[in-house]
Image 1 (tube, rainbow, N blue to C red):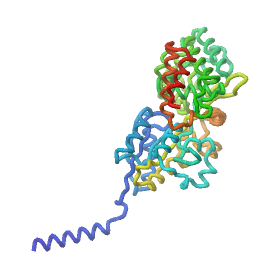
Image 2 (image 1 turned 45 degrees about the horizontal axis):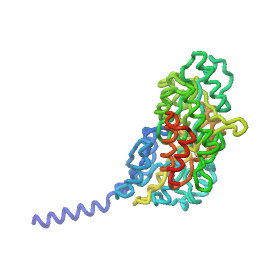
Image 3 (image 1 turned 45 degrees about the vertical axis):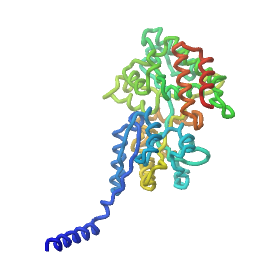
Image 4 (image 1 turned 90 degrees about the vertical axis):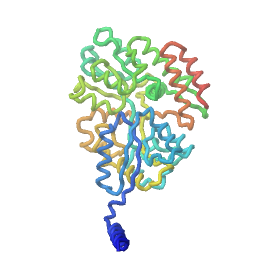
Length: 412
């Protein structure tokens, strides 16, 4: 009797389960992001909550690591079996990720509307060998920020248009006793310094590679490092710049301790926030300067994309999430933190209001974006260059010798 009752109860439970609402058949995907600039962790969680409300059958588990851990975490997870479905990746990684089968080729998922609507320069973030390995998400370059009040006190009417003018203006500010070290850079031995170096290489019209071989030890590449060393030794640059990452630069600038700073888009609205910044309302921004006779402006491609890993068991759900995160509606909503990848967004008052100066600089800067070298051996090349720059700043090696050594140790 007890057995037959148990069978009846089990049967009823199974029938009940079969009629349960389909919403409980939830697919979980894992996504890896970085815990720093542009969109903050809170912003990514808010975007993801909006996605979950619109797609209750997909659960997104979020993980955040510092930028410096993003690459290795992505690569190591591939072999672990668990891994991620969606990963944030830097513009410098598609060559390596494509060659080593880390990311899925999503060319067939890119719609005509996406191709027509997204700024052409943004696509370079996710392309390698004419294929698309994700969707561009953070469209970014470095700009020259300046403290309007300090320039005014120094009698400087307009911000610098060339790097030499930047040094001249910084010297005026220093000589007038307004600031001891007017310039802040992110020159820590990390990818941050490569972004500042690339900005200068673009100004001096240098080449990282020629015919697949290092060429940064010559011409504009050498000029760029000579400028960095000169600025550092002159006392115009904050000496702690050699340990600074971008967030350190932002804090120094927001505290009123820098007249000039090179940084990404996100600093504009953060430095203008009176809750956290002593310089709110005094923040100016222009494209990074050029070099007389060579360039009008300079810029590095610091964009990032979202891709599906080859380890993902749920590529369709992963793509649905990526499409939502990179959509024009989502991007416009968060445009004060990272400028949209969509061309028509720049005509939308909701996007431009309150950051007209930033948008004006972006129209020049984004068009001048210079790529870091596209090579599957980028990590080795970057590491060698980071070391060369650090040695030159510390006076352990001349720029010429340091860059020659980096070329020899680049793996190319």
